[in-house]
Length: 145
Image (tube, rainbow, N blue to C red):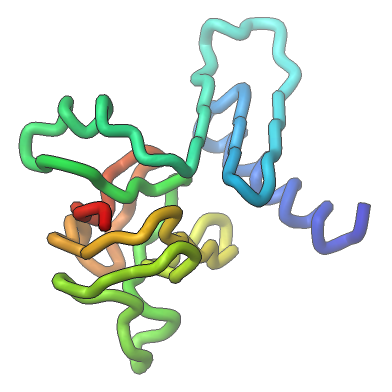
């Protein structure tokens, strides 16, 4: 394992410890990673599964958001642009293609690009720039195209 990958896995593991997450399962069409922390008292821990697919059933539970959303795959700080002086990745009304970056989530000083996994129109931006977000929290309300 290269040092860069080791550092990323260690930073993910550190976030898991901080958030009291026992298992982390991240899957996309391009890659997957599964990490399980060793612990004798499993029932005190959360299990976290992240799937970069559209999940309409979860969207119905949110009273404010109707339709499809793009959710945060991890806990961190939401940024609409790569820097304060840069152009934002998306605005309401924009069309995003598969693979387009829609925002950044900073976790443990690592900037994680969040990319669209389907073609969509951004209907509403649900999070203020610089705000904290939780894993699974809706970031954008979108319409699949």
